Amino acid sequence: MAGPFVLEIRRGTGSASLLVREASLRSLPADISLAPARLELRSAGACGALELPPGLSLAPASCRGLRSLPGGALHLRLHLREAPGGVELVYNLRESLKPQKNCIFYCQSCGDVIVEERKFLRVLPLPSENWSALVEEWCCHPNPFAKSTLHPQRDDCFLGDTFFLLNSENESHVPEPPICCSETGHHASQNGSTLKSKENTRVFCKRCKTMLGETISSDTIKYYVTEVIVHPSEESFSTIPRSQFVQSMVAQCLMELSSAKSTFRFTIKGDDGKIYILIWLLNSDTLLVESLGSSSSHNVFTLFGDTFLPNSGAVGNWNAVKVLYQPCVKSRNKELADAWENDFGVHPLKFPSETCLELLLILGLSTTSLPPSLQCMNSFQNFGARRNLGRRCP
Image (tube, rainbow, N blue to C red):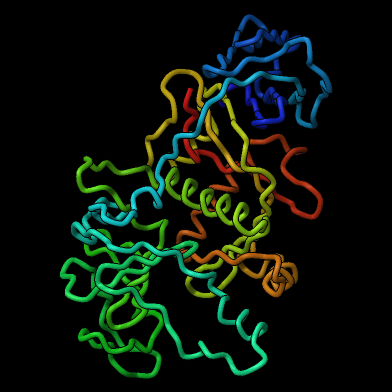
């Protein structure tokens, strides 16, 4: 059974939302006790408790809006106090990829070394992926950049929204794409000539065969941020559980783009060009505190073979982004997906197709951990909070 309590906290607002799950209320009557640093549920001789993380305290007298949700769960709101603190990210790509800093590239799935130690002289951000189309809107004459491409030099690294570009010239540790027939019937050559088939451009890990990225040109490879870990060479490396890593990287992408471009709607597209998920970012300042038991969040991890729990003991806490989403697989929500794709206010995010499906499963499992009445909002039939952006620093 999942733990009885889920506490959702909005940073900077002084408010919190408490959910007492259905399974904890089957033996009534039940008593819920609130103290500044502790929540407790007593029912039929059983007792469940939640200790708040350091730096957080509730104001029990502010409890309001107590209501019973369909299915037997209870929901209420109350005020809280929060001491100053920060967020320790599970992994931050931009901190690892800095000029004049030695780093090693690892496969996220198996930990195999993809690119040996490199030091970049320049680490530069790329313009948005639709920059060329926007230039056509700005110019009253033919696009002067129509035939221009951005390729990194030997000591360059270019950062996109969901990928980074590396120069692969003379790099013996870069995985080679498979050699097979392209759609036009020609063979992809190993000597760096332009590959004619999308399938032939895919780059795989030599050990676990996970897709890591794509060959862009004879000397440029695109790696997706969800598939490769960049780690300082002077520090010891340890793998990060797959589901935790995917959630963290996607959440960082959403937060960075919403902050830089005031964009809150996103399409999650696969490398096959298909839209898999529509995401609407609600907020990025949420802290979830949960009495674990056999928690729903732990179930998400075990489906991917992960054994990670954010905190030892009976309580877990996660910094989270909160989203509305719609799945678009098998032509679901096709009209809405088409409308979003043609909307300049929607930002596309591209990942490997397999990763898009993983993300959809993670969101779905997060949704099912909520009572039915909280699983949807307006026309979006599924509601979820992506967890494990990082840990709270006291």
